[in-house]
Image (cartoon, rainbow, N blue to C red):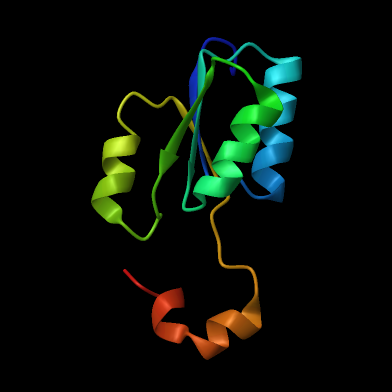
Amino acid sequence: MINDKTILITGGTGSFGNTIVKKLLSDYQPKEIVVFSRDEKKQFDMRNKFDDTRLKFIIGDVREREKVFRTMRGIDLVFHAAALKQVPTCEFFPMVAIKI
């Protein structure tokens, strides 16, 4: 189900994203893993940490509908892990939290 598939992980540089990338690269043979996130520094760190040609990194925000749709072209499987996880942040900045 995972071997030779192109996989997208939204929020891929977070704790869950790092864990699933590590698991996919060590236990399976995906064709490509696309890590979609807003944080270029975390993408840089992750690229160096894993150093695997099957990883592709895209800067983007899941609240940008068209960017997500473009990114999903050719994707076989999606792990949607993007989220604002800090409730106080969402409370202080509700319009950012619900931007659509």
